[in-house]
Length: 594
Image (tube, rainbow, N blue to C red; front, side):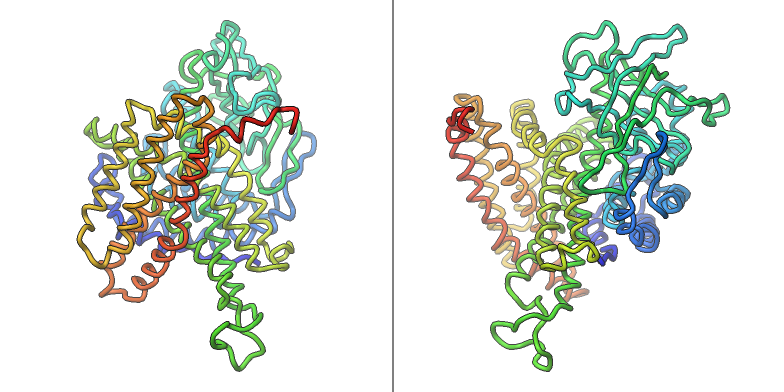
């Protein structure tokens, strides 16, 4: 069995000691009540739900999976009851507008809630996770009537939200989609088409489903400029807001997947389903990207979630499993063998997992603080700077969180050896579950291409320059401190390498049309490791401030941070070299030779 205990101490350390989030957030309009005590209470309550309700049905949910009969989907045993507790606890509307029944709390605290829910039960957490994006899209682009009818139901968790983009012939290239929407005389539209890979498209946990569907109007221009977004409910609402007669929107089948089997993925058929335009005609991508940007950060947290539970489970096993002897002195001379945690290879896997998870968590918290500032700060210039940082960090959090989450799950399975490969221990489920996170909400290569192809070039490099200033401010703050030198110096070196690699890539792309795409994944990882080093410097600085009150905690942070700087950060050299090899060796081989 896997092991999971919510890492509340680590979460509070990042939230309060590293970033002083309460001071920043309570100063923003609407967040006066988001004090440190309130945030801690929220984390405590969610931890109880995760450890006591969601985690115990994670493995059984995977083994049972979802089933479909006559178009109706049944979720695994215990999921309905667990979701009911989740919804009744107000977790679906944690950050939503209080006008429609939400709690109006910061996105920062919602990230930590999402991380622990994902660790406890990745499949179940996807259902309400998708609804968050639906709420954001309707809040931003819905009509007053749409908000009045749908937002209270979505925020309460009584109804579920989905987003319906993908078609069998049109995955990431949304300009190819064929679903049509024809105007009706009453102001609604008849939506016809088939969408695939629709998470939570149909299930038995809520009384209604609200699909946001991308489709084309009859006069739509070609490509992505001709996409509109439509609100299509499973049941048409009655005047009193209750679910009414069925709409022509139904699940045709469910996918038989590698992982996340407790989360249903549907083929959805819209056969002249009644829907309503959300936002402006032919401007559907604007609404969908409001939803998608939220979900990309959410998916990044899923990678961190799996990395955390995989690490905890591997540590528990490594301390218990006896095998071989320590190379120097036996640690268990009274027993036939030592626990495997004495072996360098095991320690390497565990320390790498921990060092990355802690850096990713810190980067995600910092990014979500920027989300809150971008939404709430009264100064437009400050909002723009924060929004720039969110835009730059989103591909790194999404791709970094999920690439590393998958690698950590595999590394921690290896700690268990053959037992990790056996279903009863639960580690192979983590490997299967996390794999999709590298694919959905924009594959990780799409994230890398977004970083090098769009984000670096905005306004002459404004985003990158703004981020460099953030890191330089940190380095200036710790400059001259002997206790920080072994951490600050590697960050400074990596930062200089990143600057040079960025300049090289921008110059190379002027001569080679394939340069950015060839370098994108390696560049994103180089950037990510440098950002993680920045987070480690920030965490070490905060930990040293606690050394008199918590010497053991500080010592542990120093050890893990030192490991990161010495054994993980040097990978930037190899990534830089691979980048600079260019695209020639990739593109020279004739297609027929493959």
